[in-house]
Image (cartoon, rainbow over all chains, first blue to last red; front, top):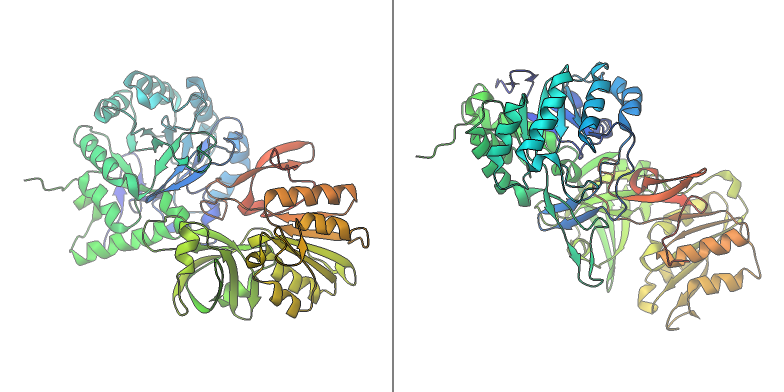
Length: 304
Length: 265
C-alpha cells in the first residue's frame, strides 16, 4: 500500500492531485463522471464578489497541443456560491479551495471577508494572475510590489491558508514568488496561463473576441516545469505545480522538480476522468518503484 | 452523462465530404433524445486536443449515429476512421427538442441546411412515432450537399429539396422555398438546424406567422458538459439577456430566446 498523502503544512491532502480552477466548474459538474471524494482537492471556479458576465464569444481557440481561453471569469459571485454550491460540496470528503478574484485590490479582501464566515472551505487560492481581465492582460502578479500588496492585504484578514497563484508572463518568476512569500502567502500555485493569441487567416480576425487569451495544455508544460523548479529551489513555502498535466508521468515530473502537489486543468475538459486516472498512475509508479510514501519523491531531481 | 471509452464503429457511410458513423454504445443509445449531442475524442494524443461535439443523428438499437461534414482538422481525422475502430465518447449531453403528445396528427415542419440536417433525422423519426405529420425541407449549395435526400424520402417523410445552383430540387435558398410553401399550409411548430443566416430568416418568418419555432445552435466547445464556460451565447430570459452555456442549456433554444448575430437578419 502506497501512502499518497501530502502535507502542505497548513493542509493535509489525501493525494497530490487537485482539480484546477476554471476547468472544473464548481466541482459538481464532474460528479456524474467521477467520485469527487478521491481527489486531493478541488479549486472551484474563480469568484468575484458579484456575479460576472465574462467576455463575449468566441472564448476558445484550439492550438497545437493546447488551447487559448478568454472566458473572463464568468461566474455566480460569492452569495450564490455560498447558498447554492457550498452546501452541496460539503457532502464530499475532499479539500475545497476557493479561487478568489478581484478587479481591484479591495475586492480580494471583500471576497475573503465574505467567505471567512462560511463553512466548508479549506483554503483560498488568490487569483492575481488571470490574463483575461478588463485591463488587457494586466494583473497584480506581473509585479513583485502589486503581488506583495494584494497578498498582505488578504493575509491580514484571512481566517484560512492562502495559496497565491502566479502568472508565468513575467521576466523573473523567482522574484515574484519571493514577494508572495514575504507577504505571508502559505503556498504558491504555479502557474496561470500564458498570454497568447490566434488568428483566423481567412477572415484576418483574431480567433478570440477578446483578441488575447490564456494558453494552457500540454504545449506549456516544459516552460512551467522549469519555473516550478526555479521557484521550489528558492522559496520555503510549498509550491503547487500546474500546466499541461495530462498523465501521471506529467504529474511526477512536477513532483520530482520540487512541487509538493499538482493541479490538473485542461485535461479535465478532454477527459472528465483525468484526475482519477492520474492518481491511479501515480500509485502504480510508486508501487513499481518501491516508493512507500509519495512525499519521498518531492524535489528529488538529480542534476549531477 | 456517460463516458464510453470504447464505442466501436459498427458501420460507416460516406458521400464525398459527408460521413455517417454508427457507434455501438448501448447506454448512450438508451438515453439519447433528439437534439442532444455527444463529445467525441478524435485522438488519444494531444493534437487536436479537444473533443468535438456532434448531435445525435439517429439511434439504431444499441448504436448511436453521427453525421458530419469533414471541414477541419478534427472532422477530417474522424472521417478517416474505419469500421471496428473504437472511439472515446461522452453523452448524451445538453437539452434537446421539446417533444410531446401535442404534435399528434398535427402538421410540423423541419428545416435543415447542409450538415445542419444531422440532428433532424432523429427528430423526424421521433415525431413520426408520436404521430405527427411531417414536412422536411432540406437545402444545400449543390446536389452533393444533399447526401441524405434518398434516406429521407425512403423513410416516408414529405420532402422538399433545394439547391443554391439548381442542380437538384428548387433553385435557390431553402428559406425561400419554405416561405413560398407557407402560402399553402401552416405548421403548428417549426424545428430547424443549419447556417445562422438561414435559421435567423426562418425565425423571422415564424415570428411573423406566429408559429413557435426551435433551433439547434452550434458552437466551438471545450468540454461539452458545463465546466469550462466556453460555448456561451447571448440568450434572452424574460427581460434579461445573459451569456448562457450552449452545451448545458442548449443546444436547442426557442425562437424567442435566441438573439441572432448581427447581420443575420
